[in-house]
Image 1 (cartoon, helix red, strand yellow):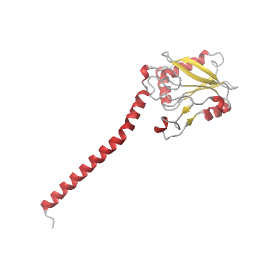
Image 2 (cartoon, rainbow, N blue to C red):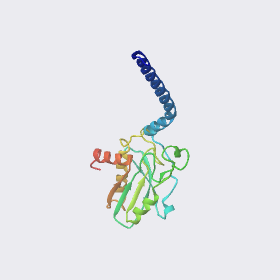
Image 3 (cartoon, helix red, strand yellow):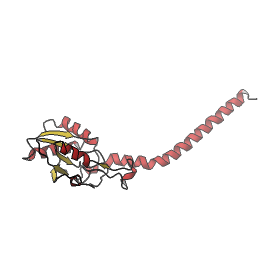
Length: 203
């Protein structure tokens, strides 16, 4: 028969057991998650430069390799895909993608995001066939563009300067400067675009 004292002792034993079990499980999970957490921390601190594996001619698009500076001088690389219209889309990309997409089907990049490839080229083909000229480029520290701000990922804070650079480049070309321009941005590229509109409204 349990006495009041025994019940208290049993409660203490149960609490101690739960506490010890929880600490053991938490320690085990921590050791398993630590490499993943560290990998994500490095990603958001420094990004992850990935190769440009595909080119627009794979989907039947003619294109021009283009090079232009960001607002602060970081060299940016991209493609211009011409169409027969006066409409221009300036397209950027998420982190850690580049203008082509993301090679998530290949190591070491298949560890991070589901193990599948992201390929923007079919989308570029659809937009082109809908009548849009396309200027798409690698943001700083991505793809084949140059390194900026010591390789640190600004999550839009620094990349907004690339938005300005792309718009200035379009305005500098005789064949593009009179076109109606749309900014087509994704994820970190969208943050950078919103920040550019707020910080550099006259551009």
